[in-house]
Image (cartoon, rainbow, N blue to C red):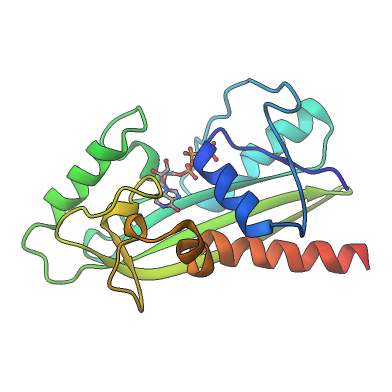
Length: 193
Ligand code: ITT
């Protein structure tokens, strides 16, 4: 089975390679020579992840999967949510995005938040979606240098360390991405059996 992971985010590529291990391998967009931009114009993770997978499938005919992820903060009515990549402006600048979150949360006691990942898998003419969520809280300040995006301010439930202070193995054991990809893996095994 040959599946293409439709992402331009190198951090996602390495996390997912680590999560799937020997279970399933995938091709990257670079592997198949696909360099077109993939827009995310919609207001939901479901629609954006579907649009990403559909664009690549329509243009290459290859079975593939894409994922869209957002950080949802309770006290900010779910912001930055589906707009997580460009919360502080058009370009994806994690430091500025984090600054904006910390500024908006100043004085808020409620720091509850969650990451959510939606995967769309296009395989054998079928479209299937999988979801994974990781609950936690937003810290008062950044800590740690590992991971990417909002990891320096996200403390997952059950931990005292931010995702950016955790090893890749620690983050991948509990993350939103882990849960969504476990569900996809399980589905692929049932297809293959
Ligand atoms: P794609 O090519 O896969 O679309 P992207 O970087 O545009 O890559 P998303 O729209 O899914 O990805 O993600 C939005 C942003 O959310 C991303 O740029 C990060 O800043 C942040 N993000 C996603 N997953 C994260 C994680 O596991 N930890 C911290 N931040 C994350």
